[in-house]
View 1 (cartoon, rainbow, N blue to C red):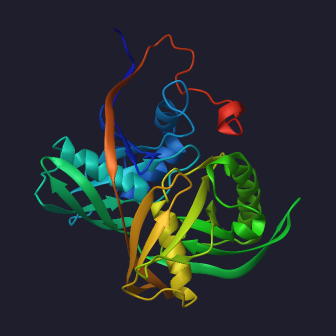
View 2: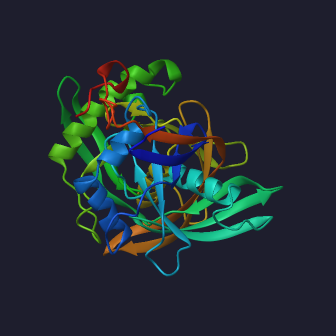
Length: 346
């Protein structure tokens, strides 16, 4: 078969959230850092993301990770996250997928019962401990990039909803975190479509009314996600837990509990004195899957108080794909329609 593009992708999901991993067929983009390489893809070579994520090869539920040689000397490999409308600096569920794929297909050596590895993301280094047995990666624990509360107790004026209270917190991207219960939601699967509609309205309003910038990297800015958070509960063993729905544009709920969203919520809770260093936390998704998290220590993020957090979960390989482009295909970068994408993308 004649093809003008041939990309090898390993399918994977972490606690329900799809995070495919590109293992071949893509030349590394230019750049002296992972962040510069990410920016090149965003501004000069976005056709790769569209080719893999847009229909007919992808869908609104798909995330894809491009594995690259690390730029930082302490990292074994790097990866860039591609989502339906964005290239986030970091993603917890995608990290779990990348680690699982790299270890299980042999791109990185596996050590049982625990493999320790440092990976590089555009947002910084992440330190990983993977529990491994019989050639399988059974659980991945990621020490995330530093998280912090950016703006607390804000008011957002949202057309049709009125004034919405919330907070903006960073956990690898900026999240506007709002009280799901106060908005009339219980974060159950039957509410998914309505949650998406309201969350996208809130995100757009928060991004316009409350600009935010990362204190150490001004190129990381703007609210990217809305996190609909249910009240924190206490398990029988005393561990705190909470259910959430993180909405990704153009309009899709994270099937996992969202790793960076969990870190953002921990940073918010820590800033408000609701969780201490060393405390564990169980984060639950709209479909009932779990990430186990912990506040590790207080940190300084460019003069802003923050926390180091860890998140852990499970990921499973779903298949190996060879995506090709026939030179006569009229849709070389795919297409989107608002019937499944909530709103069509260019």
